[in-house]
Image 1 (cartoon, helix red, strand yellow):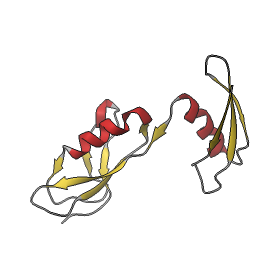
Image 2 (image 1 turned 120 degrees about the vertical axis):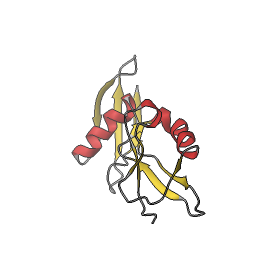
Image 3 (image 1 turned 30 degrees about the horizontal axis):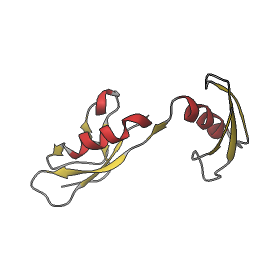
Length: 118
């Protein structure tokens, strides 16, 4: 079985052909032009991950805080993580890089601020 992916690892957008065995396990890939694409192709068919960005409410402020996961999380946890972020409030002041959620959805990955709120 084969899958065609468009790599999102760099601006090149390579078209990568991924070969899978009958059980859906990664066998090989071709069409990538860098090691980022090579790694992306294997991860995308075995354990896809994404960095999540969102807005979080700041107590006593109308302006929201922009946040992101510090590292990519499993793709299947995106909506659950967005719900956790939506239900979490942070107190000002907040600085870029501050951890606002220690462990999003049991992934072990923190959510960090991407904006300063004085």
